[in-house]
Image 1 (tube, rainbow, N blue to C red):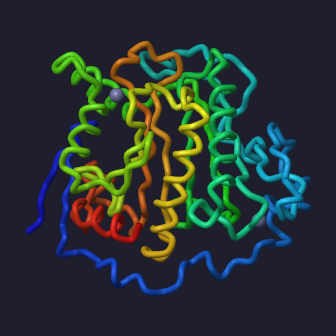
Image 2: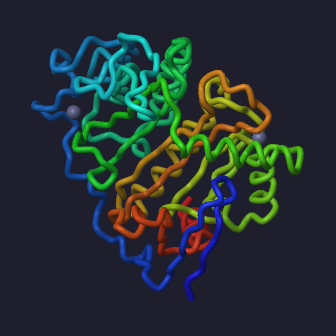
Length: 336
Ligand SMILES: [Zn+2]
Ligand SMILES: [Zn+2]
């Protein structure tokens, strides 16, 4: 029997149609990245091809003594084909009675996460993932200084179904002068929850998941990972700090170490046990200079892309998943 559940953070409904499920045991082929080599001569992100990318904004040196084959371990560059450019003002202009527009001003950067072409979070070492998180934090804080920027979106597209064609491990950061209705909706729900119950919606969610345990994937000193009650994607997993921290920019060094270990573990399980699924990873953090600190609580969402979105999802905004979150969590927990 299918079930319809509501996501408390957006009030959106999802359908869980478990009859359509592809059982985890069906994922028997080797991970899809396992055929790749450590270096690909025509890859713009591989060491030696640095001239194929715009000039680096941030470089973490490679530690040759520790076996790193490159002079760098992480490079952050402007996107060669940016969606937005840093120059210009962000005044809104009115076109006709109610259409508004502004310059395509913002930032679009790529974090090249490793010199190794065939690496990915889940197969890297924990210290290598820590470096990625440090690069994320550094760019996040820097871009937040720009007064024109309203929203910083950090994400990782892994695989074709997740919207990337580049195999080399990378994440992206896009800073925009505008918000979307999705962000406004999330903020409104969190504000309403605070107004009603006097508490942070995400702190309450954490407490509930910890109490029930049935959707928990893992718990560490600073983070809880769980499959949400009403996921948008099969095996969707959230990783959230256990203490109330509004913005990702507030993550401290001990949390970076802990989060790196958790992400590497969860994505490693997905890599090995779910046959390296395509996925999107998104960092959910409030708009820049958001005043409602009491109801913002940053977290990471990992959304495996086992299938393509269909017209139903696009037309209705209602997502269908095929595995009960409790079963998905049990599977990921057992593989831990
Ligand atoms: Zn490469
Ligand atoms: Zn909170």
